[in-house]
Image 1 (cartoon, one colour):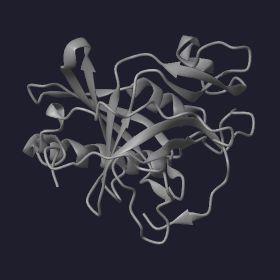
Image 2: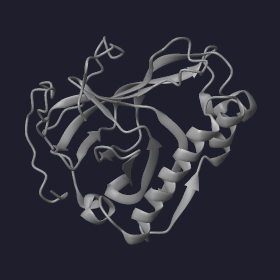
Image 3: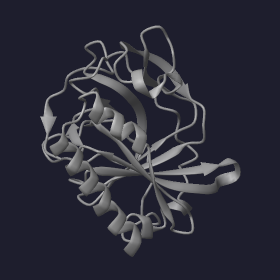
Length: 238
């Protein structure tokens, strides 16, 4: 199913366990687990974003994060924004989590089961397409309320003309220096990035599927952030 095939609907947010699929319009959580070796103050989940399901099939999970969505994100324990901290201490100073709103343009996120990355689409005002963003991460694990992953620092930006570039290589290197990622994991992440580059160069799915022309259902409301956003779920097969 491609972008033009994806339906719309008013889903109830029912769970998708035991092989079930979410329906278009269902509300789920897109979360990232903290690195076990990080200074995140014991937070098992340090990023949580309520999203609306666009499509959920055996080939692809597509979700929409609307502008104004209340999310959870990490900050340093003294309130400093993570990317305002010098790289040398960015991953070693104590952290906590805060609630804040996503006030940029909405983001469409695409994840194929088993892939060690997801692909995000960004637009500027007036639905002017800006770029694809490949977020290298653990393959998503599904649970009744959403999907979980763990970020791998390294990313790829893909422009509308299909040219691309690595992003955050300095953070990727620093994560290795401070022990957040061992050499074997780093090699696996780089190999995953090269596999993603191969898909980009041959312009395979999901880049070739026309998602840049997709638009959200005008009837969708911004999903709320639940109080138990950090709950530990029972896993279901991805």
